Amino acid sequence: MSSSPLSTVNYQLSTNLEPFIFRQAGRLVANRAAQAAENTDDRAGAVNRYALRALAPEEYAAFTLDLCNNQIDRHFSRFPEEELERINELVPGRPLMERHDLRGTLPRGRFFRSTLHREDEVVSVRPEVYVLRTAENEDFILNIEGGVYRETSIGFSFRMPECSVCGKDLRTCDHIPGRTYGDKACHFIMRGVLEVAEGSVVSSGSQGTGFVREDRDAPLLQGLARARERFHQPIELESKKLWAQE
Ligand SMILES: [Zn+2]
Image (cartoon, rainbow, N blue to C red; front, side, top):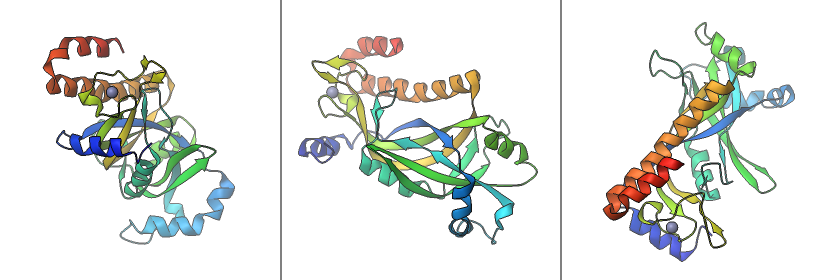
């Protein structure tokens, strides 16, 4: 699917369009104590590649995130495996932010390594992040350890949303993700990952979940609708209406 000549051609054609930027929701996965103990040596080495002085293990907390996978998500998007490999390479070194921190933009932690995790046909990117056990991070760490902060949101940019029905850039065709055309359900395949900007932790619960949903919906659907309006004006009203119903 990913290496078909058709999709390669369309990818080339689409490179004059601007990269597509959005957020993908993920989640924190628990680290079993046994696994943590096994990996301690490795982990310290990996963390200290980013520290300016060697950190002792008790100076930081480390968490694993289930960031994104190769399945079609509820917004009808999907990463092919080669893009997950790319994300896996890009994540280490990126900052972890706190979504609700109104004080500004300084990171809470740093992603220090990442692996591709396989379970049957599901391939997911599982990065690890370290957070210094400073007084200021104490509550943040407690909320993650206690399972209150468990949703994550990661910002990516990628070059092309490829339509699963016709293989074109979704911004240049009329198919709507989530709709069925004949026997094909439309989703889009995210190709050409350019950058992983940052990861954020957000709190769970109904408000937290709503925040994540809103966060993800806005850039994805509105961004796509805007891109289509610019690209072919004649369907502007129709596509706006369809997206607004989503
Ligand atoms: Zn299409």
